[in-house]
Amino acid sequence: MPSLQIRQMPDSIYNALSFRAEQAHRSLTQQTLVELTAALGGDGKLRRLQALERIRQRHAQQTPPAVMPDLEAAIRQDRER
Picture 1 (cartoon, rainbow, N blue to C red):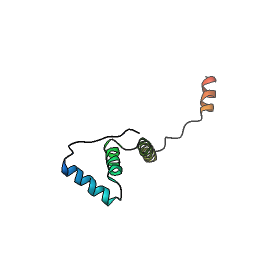
Picture 2 (cartoon, rainbow, N blue to C red):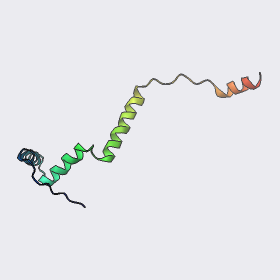
Picture 3 (cartoon, rainbow, N blue to C red):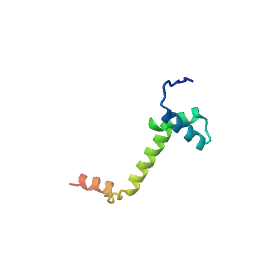
């Protein structure tokens, strides 16, 4: 797994990360990965699940289509013309 070293990190960012890591009971490295993942759009699987949920919600809000005509009867009627 690749690693990353950050040099000359401002104290304010380091302190904020340290505080959040402590509050979440994570290491500084774990918290940094959580923050970077969130900033870059999150986990791909999670994004897909959220997109599917939005599609389901839109689909549930749509009105059902009008009753389709009996296609077989329409074809017969057309042939009898």
